[in-house]
Image 1 (cartoon, rainbow, N blue to C red):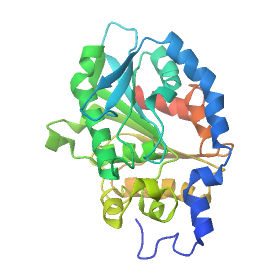
Image 2: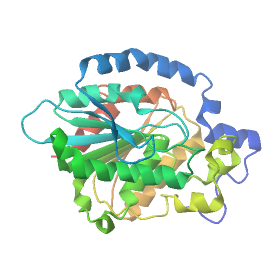
Image 3: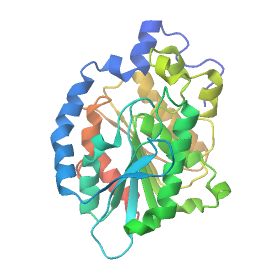
Image 4: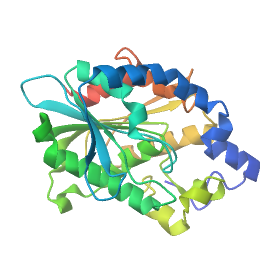
Length: 290
């Protein structure tokens, strides 16, 4: 939990931008996307898929479903992409489904509303709506609605934390439907983003940031959680993962916490693709709890 003086209070504007804007810390960020493109094209070409399934009226309230080939109800994994709540699209992350589907896990890659057309309120609401839609409808696609796991990268890590903090009982849903979660290189307190150039698109205010600070809101879903960050990321970005881990621990969840030395903020996405990799292994454990 933040004290009265946040750790970023003494940073110069330039250092603050470096610490909290990953594209400034890693100006070669586009190369990581290029490396993933062959894997993504292969997934689109080879996997069975149902794309652009709407879960609301907004054009970005859509999911892609990659069903597992099995006769019994399959466990379900939902992935939320990053992009600082203002960029990216589910179509660029089909490759995450490849390993999971091969292990019998139906995979959902979700879009959600983006800034600046929406505020962070709308972004979060649409992510929660995606999960609710999956729970209520995935049976029609061969999935088990009571065996849903989550993962997300960067802003998607924040959305995973929002889902864990949501009051599912108020929605008439038993929170036990979420069986595991993996958050990678997440931002858990949006407040420092107010002071970076990205906020021209995010339009964050202190009030919006406070509403969506998941470092202070208790997790109401009690499930195993794994947290990851890249060892090459700026230290204040890494610190968010540790702060969120402490918050979970104070609220009865003991997360696994991993800093992967070889990775920065963007190339860490390559660790999702193999079950022998730390993140890939964590995804399987989240989706297939013992």
